[in-house]
Each structure stands twice: as C-alpha cells, then as structure tokens.
Length: 224
Image (cartoon, rainbow, N blue to C red):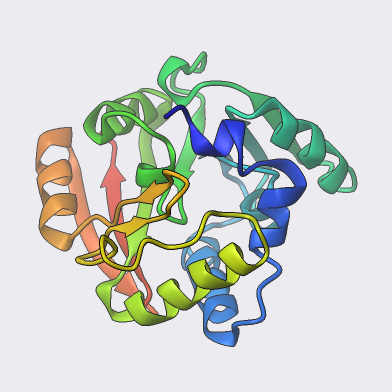
C-alpha cells in the first residue's frame, strides 16, 4: 500500500487522533514535546520531519526562534496552515522527507511520535538526510515508543479504530511492538538496540534516552 498518512490518515482525521480520551496518552504526548522544549534556549531554528498538521510545531514554537515543518500530505499542510495561523514563527511546507531541499540551515531537527515508522522508507537514509539539514553543532531528535507503554498504546489504537480513523486492529498479528490493522496499516516500534545501531551507523556522537516510561529517544549531535 502507499503512504497511509498521505492517502488516508491526514488533515482533520489526523487531528482527531490526538483528541484522545486516554489520560496516559495525553501525558505521553506532553512529556515527549517537553523533553525537547526544555533543551531549547529560544534562539533555535527547528525543522520538524513528518509534521502532520503542526501539532508539535505549535508546542515548540514558544520556545524557539522559528519552526519549519515538512509534511508529505498536502491536505494536512492545508489544514495545518489554518491550525497554525496565529503562530507567526511557524511555516508548514509540503515536502517529501527523502527529498529535503534544505542544507545546513537548522539548529535542531526533530522527528517525533514514532516518526521513523510514520515516514516510510529507510530509517538510516532518513537520518542521514536530516543530519545534512543541520548546522554544525546541531542536534537531531528521533523518538519511538517505550515498550513500557505498549498496553496503553494498544488502547489508543483501538480508540482510533472506534472513531473510524483506522481499520480494526488485527489482534492476532499485533505483538512484539508491531501494530497491524485490518485495512493494511502497520506501525513499527524501534527497539533500543535498533536505535543504537542507527546511532552507530550515523557517524556522529549520539545517545539513547527514555522519558516518562513512554518515549525512547535517539539523539544525534553533528560535529562542528
């Protein structure tokens, strides 16, 4: 199948994903953006990969100089430009993450909320392209789910299915960090070992960190 976020789960549908009635998911989403926000000084120019309709951009904007988001779904970009209309230091652009037009422009690159799974393709190549968009001494943040939030994550996906945003979960196939829906949607979870391998292959200093027992981060530091 094609890119699910481009063809199916975009714009207002994607917005509805985050209108959750599960408090633990609300906590997870806030903790993940707070993890990045508390490391900002207010002077950074940030690039978000797979920005959707701008949810994370809106959260980061008050703590940054400027936030640029790229998103492959033009419907999400149109919806996002309305959602971000009062954020004067944000721009959301339609762009394929594997065809970035930027070069060493940003202090920070973020690809959060399991973006390495959502942005379909080769994760190592995506990381390489993100690093090429960083200034020297820049930092890139990639996050996936901690295994500790697996049960709540399944509850969230079932909630999305009840809303008609995703297909019904394939309960037999869904296990070991992999979520399958009967409409063909698949979400991958990246293990600590896999993130470590990506960090090793990136050719720069990196660390693996966990926050809130919900998000696992790969953080890459580009050399000056």
